[in-house]
Amino acid sequence: MTGTTATATGTAAGDTASRVLVLNSGSSSVKYQLLDMRDSSRLAAGLVERIGEQTSRLVHTPLGGGGGDKRERTGPIADHAAALKAVAEELAADGLGLDSPELAAIGHRVVHGGLRFSAPTVIDDAVLAEIERLVPVAPLHNPANLTGIRTAMDLRPDLPQIAVFDTAFHTTMPESAARYAIDVETADAHRIRRYGFHGTSHAYVSRETAKLLGKAPEEVNVIVLHLGNGASASAVKGGRCVDTSMGLTPLEGLVMGTRSGDIDPAVTFHLKRVAGMSTDEIDVLLNKRSGLVGLCGDNDMREIRRRIDEGDERALLAFDIYIHRLRKYIGAYYAVLGRVDAVAFTAGVGENAAPVREAAIAGLEELGLAVDADLNSVRSEKARLISPEYARVAVAVVPTDEELEIATQSYALVRGVNA
Ligand code: ADP
Image (cartoon, rainbow, N blue to C red):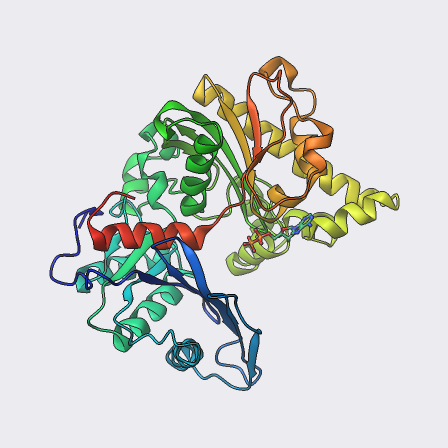
């Protein structure tokens, strides 16, 4: 069941089919995009949120052929099946129905693929069972992903359904980076190791960074900084991930919007013994009430910068702690890689927050790293360099596109070519 790059034999779509529907199913939401892989263009995109509540909402945006007005539905959508049916209706209204022979595959984002899945995989019963087996290590995400997959399979049982795993890109990490230094038998019995997440983004951004440098991915070493609400760093050597900051779960590593990132594990014993908190309460504290929001009450970097400009000291301290951790990872991954060709910033904060990029790189000239203030202040949706010409290491802003990456990998699998 190791991830396969073979063609989805027997289920391959017709030769002319070029569309891929990408589904990202959360516990109460479904995000979707329909892409045409002939030119990687987007035909439609949307989101269903608050599934199962009275106030569910579907927002659908037609994007093909000059686009069209955004459409919105509100009112109860009972479950994922109803959500996907509503999405199918919206797509059909644009002439993009899911029953179309143009549809080549449905690509699903799956958060945890454990060690077994190192590549996009055609979903069958055995794959479903393995994703289910991984629920204990991804209790929030994998059940929702499974619901989305099963719903889509009911809708189009004849179509290749492809799982693209957040963990897959990190399966190349050596044992020295992937293992925690704890008792090996205990770790193995409970599958405790560092898996890493955001892999689809790290894969896409590291490849796009190589492209920006005019090189093949095999030729370059890149530190990717995916700074969204969740945040992670990775060290990518010649196109392969050799270390990443998230671990068994997405809690480890950088300071995030609401997660603490790295912390002495003894803090949890202390909270239990001294503060009398339960395991669930500590889980919520570290995942939802920590990071930037825990430090200053806000997790939106725009708001934090606004408060800093007004002289707010708590916001400034939160920013400084965020940057300090980020710089530690840049230094660590510099050492892991030995030679660095580029540092790439991506996701909401990385793509938009010039002060974060400036502060993360400031004073690192000895490492060949510098940011040009003018280039850094340019706002653009394109991949671009922000380092001065003299700098030995390129610093880049590379917008991530996880949906395109999922569609590309899914399409390559059904067409039997390498992504
Ligand atoms: P996720 O996918 O993890 O939810 P995103 O990658 O969309 O997150 O990033 C969301 C975060 O990006 C916001 O919480 C905010 O901190 C930051 N962000 C978005 N736009 C800007 C901006 N213009 N300037 C600074 N930060 C921004």
